[in-house]
Image (cartoon, rainbow, N blue to C red; front, top):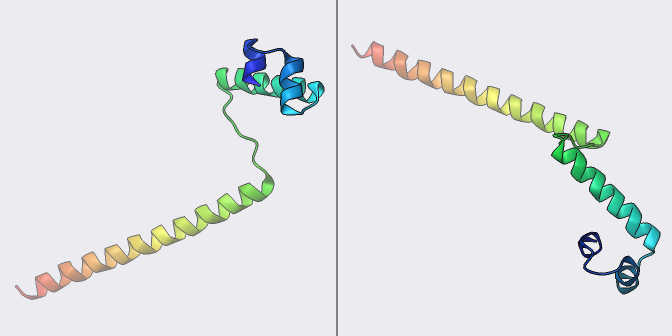
Length: 89
């Protein structure tokens, strides 16, 4: 596609060589250029599917729960160490 966009080779030759229809090439190049324009304009959002979003939310919830458990365990261990040290005095 880039060869065609740069003008290094004719679109017809490029499509013939790659075995694709010229209409498909033009559709791909239009999508490519539009995505580039959006990216340059700062629109970096990605269209995620609802399944991807659900999976990521589920993973985030599981990670938050694991972190909370580790924090609680850490606090309990700190309290037990501090408590044990005071009893020896």
